[in-house]
Image (cartoon, rainbow, N blue to C red; front, side, top):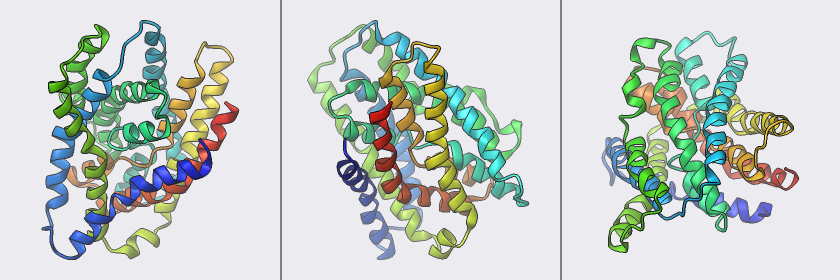
Length: 313
């Protein structure tokens, strides 16, 4: 896919935030709307998106090796970026802001935005969507463990049961047996599942617009940490991942499609979970909000540019 088509596709995604921004600015939506929509996103739309992404595809035994590579590198690459991010914020004195920046630098929006963007960028390659769903299994586990620790700096907030007991993972656990057995789900059942899953992208972007409307724009543009997070998440993370994958590919049978999938997933902007954890556990929520918003805006340019490199992989 060329630069212009990729740019237009990503721009279409981010533009979905505009209605939420103007509705909130016009006071047509109350202050707590973003929190209410976030509950719908987490407990309804994303789980059904995960289910529909699996149940609409046909399983082949040859996919298992690629799934194993995705799970393995999903964990390894997130750990690598997390520790790399620490180097960029080592001099930051505000510990809460430092932890928020580190979390925002490696937690990617691979669920709410990752799956829909993959569908747009690779419409003729359903394996890309499957790889993103599988990546989300590892990502959710990392989010509720390393993600919580990264934001809070304390192990007492890490609850291992959350690795399994979160809506998207439960949805995948339900759908996987049907996917592996190639069970055909009746269309009468799949239609509402798809409808609810398709809400994920517009809902997540509307929430982004609501949060943008509620924050002081000066805090978005006058903090060097916000730009540094964007640099680490949108540039360093994908390029570092691509380099590691190409190097590993010299010794391991990693397919090209797997490499490209992991590379593009690493290029996704910061996940809203970084902000959610900052709000839940008393972290630097202004820093997390500004970093998340800046990442999402700048990815309009960075993802198309990074996509150009896939032709050389």
